[in-house]
Length: 298
Length: 295
Image 1 (cartoon, each protein chain N blue to C red):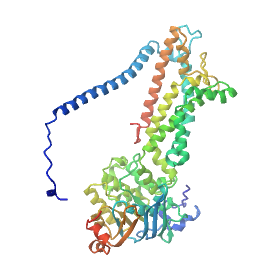
Image 2 (cartoon, rainbow over the protein chains, first blue to last red):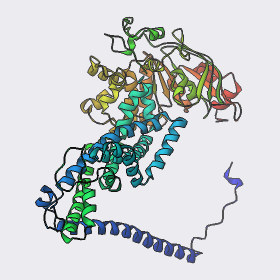
Image 3 (cartoon, chains in turn brown, orange):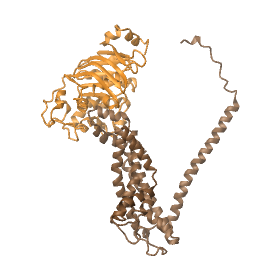
Image 4 (tube, rainbow over the protein chains, first blue to last red):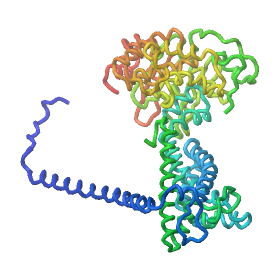
């Protein structure tokens, strides 16, 4: 096509519809304000929650709180949630150990092996994410607690069931982010598929997977409903044996908050702040561990 | 998938011929031979399918050792598909399959009897976009094929092999003092040479290059082309390229593939010495393509 066959286009009337330009500028300004307010509102609410918990929690949080069990009479001042802290770390630790290896394995199956079964697994995972956790607790109560009694183990099983779909979904998402070219590069070197997954795909997705696991851990730390039916709680003394009924931070916060005694409510606020602090510490630690990998999890 | 390895010979080179691939794991393989200048590939009646769609039909092409064979043709003509069939990479695409025969030292690599994992150690591949492993250092990238391919067994003289591969890829002088730095920190052209070094470290006989310069600037492209020129002394090289000038510059033999009509599978139209094919093509389709009338 040659240019001389084209009729020259009329010069665009740059200045004619001034109204249009002004209207567009006006819309732009209005929308910018609306979106900024929405963002500010969201962040503001979150900061309010954090600030409120911090302000209430700091009234009582201190060495005494972190080194003692609650007083026998909930109306009394003093005491702390040491047994709950120990219980939370143990129960969530066991739940993590139970849920993370199969969760990552399931994600590898879904992403790397594909096929119809894998999409079914993927779909069921999405359904399980939405399962109310009180239902999970009731299920573990029915199949485990009735036979073996209340215990930290039962609580860990319930929390593992809560965590499992979260871990699978987060890990699968991160594995999908690993460029296909890397798998091809590895296979083309004469590396087996299994070794490619272990040595190329998983390390590349590592930090994203760790972030996803930490979200699941944080979620489990705060879960209360399934623990009411499984770990039950134990406010009397420090219990480190997970085969016995155990207290956790979330259970103690719940138990103390609903008493109506000022002293117990102060302990509940301090417990809430402790819970947030523990989750935050874990998240920072996980970020430091997973810093070297390339996709996901910033 | 089990990857039997011969004791005492830690390098895939020790697998002198494909029939050896079927040998029991502990039987000593023939002594490692010095790379005698690549292997000959004989592609006969190759047809490839993606599911029900036929992508390539009846390709016949002999690839001689110590030569660079270029495959040119418009997008979708199946050049890359043919390349992938040679080292079994088509098997990584769900639904893809190949018919016909690709003979490498008397063995049809398309046969079910051939272990694609071992085949790929004899036939290396370089891809369109540089794809160094992002979690690995420069050194680890080059060593990856040997480390990951041998179930963690230590390869003696790994340092020497890495250095030699990097020297062969013309990258040694640029990275010798930062071998522990991440491979992804290199420039695009350096990354591609790193990928070539990574493929060479496994000591293949054949090197397949799938548009290795299409993501690179002209200077980096020149570096890769110079490299191809030296590598042809030792390897059988097949290069797919969109760039006809590149084919003319680097190859000894050129094969032209095209799609006769929309929706039809790609076919090989003409193959011949590069200078002859570009100066006096025998087929009208080739002439139209290389003179820029189509494509």
